[in-house]
Length: 500
Ligand code: ADP
Image (cartoon, rainbow, N blue to C red; front, top):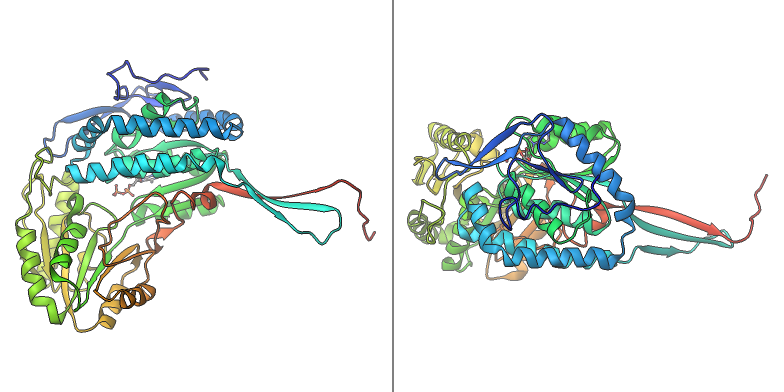
């Protein structure tokens, strides 16, 4: 391993990680087999960047590097760790224009979603800079005279992070910043759809901020090749924790495999999130909240509102204003400042949206607005009367499609909200906060917002779901539970007596 790290700053200009390279042990290296793959701009269809097409061999080299770096990083002075994280925050903040362009070009997100991710990541880095100074444990009274006992938190070792494409910068950030701040080393595997904005950009920023070689390693891969890298993370005994953000189907497979190896895994999975609009809600606000919650990043956020339940008393008024606002949302080139709905991530996602909407309609649903693809975009779409057997009704569909239904009471809204196998986030709109909090208590979700829609995140909050939405929590304070191990330590100055 190199004693110094290579920031890559002069390879393709400041702020751009070198093309088609992994970042392993402080060096930008091609895939072992020399392979590359293109990532595409979802709006133009043109090649956006070339990334290294890694395999299990590359993942193993990355684990070697992370394992080798751990002993030193685990005992690095808190001030050193803090300084790196603060410098990284400043770098990211200064480069926001470049990073915004990168997110837009690689994932097709419009400006608001790029800004949310950059703000989140900068804030996370600054908050996590305090983690190296978090108290490391407790002294515990012992009934054995002369024994001093403590519960001491220690970093776990190598953490493998598997991140998705839909908010690549922020979701990669939360998968690695907390673990690194706490003294772990990380191997990051971004999505094949966002190898740069969800992967190598972090190696570039953190290495430039002074992160020692091997503390963060990034391995990318071509479409269809994630499995071999994931298998390495699960089977290599040096990887002590995995965190995964992605679909429930993939998370379930990983959890089953991790279980065989008794390896802990944080799972942030799919959602099918309800937004409840009670009769006393402010209708103007409810419309704005519902439009944002359903259509931010063209509905490609796990927290997006997928089901809106509006109480009958205000249903007509809410529906007509909601549909008018949805129909007027600007669709098109995410580079245009006014665009709200940009392209969906790829052709497969576009065809899935079309298939599921068509299926719902064949089964009896009615389209209130939208409903016909205009490649590479899918227009913001509202359906009603979607029967429970339609895939749209029970499975997460990443895209700008939301179901709207009228309910007769708050109780009915809660019952229907809880009828999902998922349990990520929810929103309850009412002028009566106490009533909202009571409904929040009854909702089977890991996250609930009263008088807000479901799409929210802040680095310090306990982010995560229940039921098929996963387990474990991200969040700066909560990362301690996930990415440290408690060791019970006792020490005696004098011999003790034993019964035999
Ligand atoms: P999505 O369909 O939203 O991309 P996925 O669950 O397929 O959701 O992807 C989330 C992340 O999981 C991505 O980084 C992807 O490459 C990764 N992934 C997909 N399949 C596997 C697998 N078998 N093992 C490990 N990671 C995987």
